[in-house]
Image (cartoon, rainbow, N blue to C red; front, side):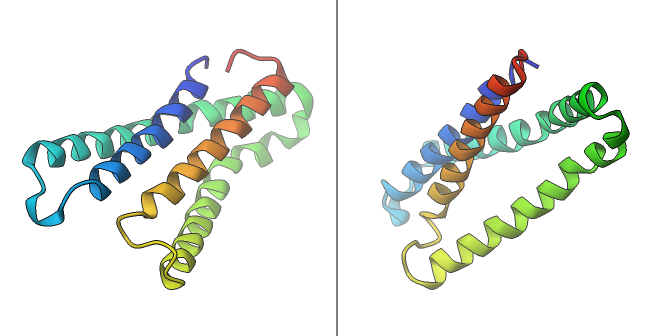
Amino acid sequence: MQDIPFLYVIMPVSLVLIGLLINLTNPHNFPLAFGIIAFILIAVVCIVNVSYGANVTVLFLDLANDEFPGALDLSSTFNPVFSNLGIAVGSFVSSIAIGTGLFNIGNIVFISAIFGFCSLALVLRLKKLTKEDI
């Protein structure tokens, strides 16, 4: 479980790079190489997003088993519940940002990157609190 903080670094950095690729190029003369790089970065974000889900679920189950054995069933629901909560909050914040005119559709990845960096801070805090090699 040592790779979890590393995975949380890859996601927001990839999102920032995608945003820079989109915003620093002319949409009418978008080079094919930039499109390929952006596609690869999006694939990296998707792969990383899928890869840490099982690790986090096992971490919750291990913590619940050690600290609160009666809450084992509750801890198994954390990942799906908070995934749905993240989808709802992300959609809400993005719609507010676009609706108020603060961001356009090309800049919305920067909001996702902010959420990614917040997740990294939470994971590092969890690592410090549990004193585990996550």
